[in-house]
Image (cartoon, rainbow, N blue to C red):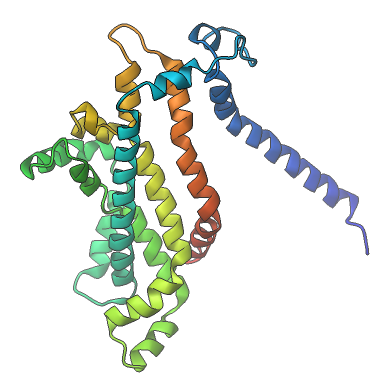
Length: 279
């Protein structure tokens, strides 16, 4: 077997070296947070930064579990995230299929208008959404918060591009076999769209689980808080903030997202790559 040319091996080695350095830079904040969660605040805030907890303490995690509302905040976050993911799978899959294969008046103009919304910063819609939720009587309600995230333009775009990558031949064959648009969607499109749906589920779950501004604005009762807002509420005071328990809570809060990514990352990568081919 011929060995790779020296120049090619050097380029490959340099590529791995650069990627390793970038990965280390990317992971540094996470590693620093993990170390700081076992420190006292005086040590965690020391300069230059210290990388070995001395003394090693579990008090930050103990403070979390002494909070009576901590399990409630976790359940609230899981409920909102689950509802947002389920709603987006339904709305993005159906709307993406409609924009990909169905014919209706103004389809291209409507789709262009939706894409234009991707350029609008989310905080611009904060006040109109607040007024809408108040008028619906859903303020300080977890279902009202989930309702605001029940549809995503980026999700619709992702699913449309994925369906287009499948080709029209499959759906034309289903139509020749007597399947209508709904039957083709249920029996042809959905079974083939698991990679894109997996990617969509990860993105929406991450966004809903880590959301801070929306829950802060639309939720008022401490028992209805989601985890990010609850941690801030529990450890922030008028003059100072206990950051190390918040860091510990943030690390615990990141575990579900890490587990979800490990389970579904192959779907996410495949879904994004295939969808990008039609971009």
